[in-house]
Image (cartoon, rainbow, N blue to C red; front, side, top):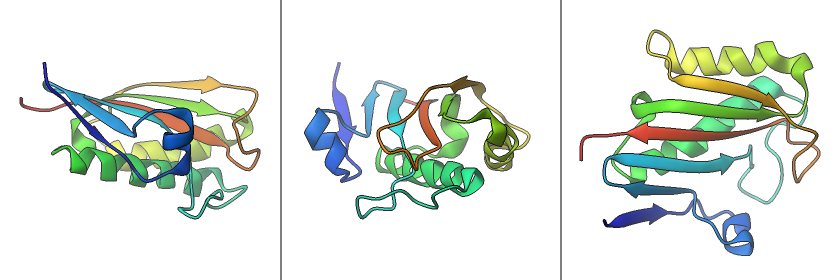
Length: 129
């Protein structure tokens, strides 16, 4: 089965050996996406809501490169470093998905590669093949 891959241009993708997203048939798998500012730093340090929105902006760009969009997401996994901000993560997620939410999990972790990052998100989508 053919696979289509896209990159966001993040230096981490080349250094670690992964792509931002891969499409196989009707399924799209988006790698863990952190709130990068596009210049090697963290977007909005200390702002969980803004970081969550930024992760989804990066995810949306990858989906669009593969012919999909946010409404095609069927599952998200949010890896968070501080549950004190759970309402901020949740608000950003709910605003994006509203009345058509995907299956989701919020998982507490001890840290991310950059300590300013509060969240990393994975997403799975399904589109017409």
